[in-house]
Length: 415
Image (tube, rainbow, N blue to C red):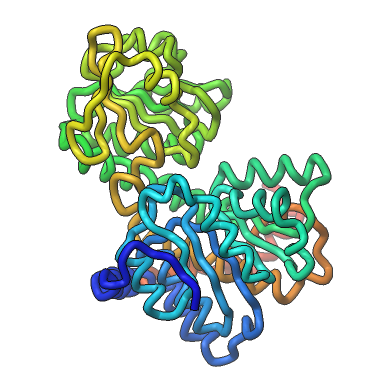
C-alpha cells in the first residue's frame, strides 16, 4: 500500500481518538451496522479530500464496512491530525496527509486521484478542481461526488454555471442536518476552541467583530455573546445585516469596526475581507482569526510585506509589528478551529458525515439518471438522519394524525 504520513508510530494514539469519536457518533455507527451486512459500495473506489480528523476516520471506517475502497488526503495544510492519519495508514487506507504539508498539498491530492476513483468526496472543491483542470483523463470512471462545505459548493455551482462540471455532485453542505447544525453549533464552538488554545484570552468584555452572518457567522456571534463579548457584525448582504441587527448585534462596515474591535473573526468565504487599510486602523493588541475555508479572508500577504517584524508568541499565534503596534494573527489566517484545535465535535459531525455516506449511496444507485450538475440532499434523507439522532438522544416527538394530515393537504376548510 502506498501512503505518506508523518509517523506511523503515532497510530495507537490515533486509534484511541477514533474510538472516542465512534462513541459519540450514533447515527453514523448505526448506518455502519446496517450497511456492513449488504455492502452496497462493494467495488466502488472513493477519493476523499476532507480534514483528516478522528471524526473523518469514523466516516472512512464506515465506507470500508459498506464495501468501498478508499484513498484519502487533507483539504487544508494545517488541519491533519497526524496520529489519526497514521492510524488510517495502519488500517491499510492509502493516506497522503500530514500537518504542515504546504509545499506538498496538491501533490497529496494528485496521489489520491491516481487511484482512479469512481466517487469524489471534497471539502472546499480542491480535489474536484484538480481533477477537472490537471487530470481530466482520470474522469472516465467517475460517476459522481459530494461537497462538504459552503465555499466548495459555491465553487462547484460556478463550474456548473460555466458548463465546466463533468459529473453530478451532491451538495451535502446544504442538507439542513448539516448546515443548521455543523455550520452553526459546530463552528461556533470549535472556533473558540481554536482561539482559546492559541491565545488563552478572555472573551468577556471584549469587542468581537464577526465578518459575515451566514450559518457560520451566526454560530460564532451566538457563542461570542454567550461568552460575554460585545458583538459587532459586518456584512455585504442587506438581509443578513438586518437579521444580525434584529438578533441584537451592532452592525457596521469593516471600516467602522476596525478601530474598535479587540478580536476579529472572518467567516464570509470571500477574499480580502480584512485588508491592510483596516489593519492600519486597528488597536494595539488586536487579534485576527479566520473560520472561512480558505486563507484568503485576511490579507496576510500584505501584513507580511508591511510589518517591520514578526515572532511566534504561542503555538499558532504570531505577533506582527505594524506601524509600531502589535497585530496577532492566529493559525496563519487559516481555519482557526482546525489549524489551532481539533475541529468540530463528534456529535455534530455525526450528522454531517451521515449525509456524506447516504449521498454516496444515492450516487451509486442513481448516477445513470443524474446529469453533471449540483444536486440537493432530499428532504427524506434529512428527516431520516434527524430521527435517528433524536432516537439516540432518547427524544420522542409527536406524529400527525390522519385528520391533521388531511387538513394540511386540503384547501376547503376555513374558519
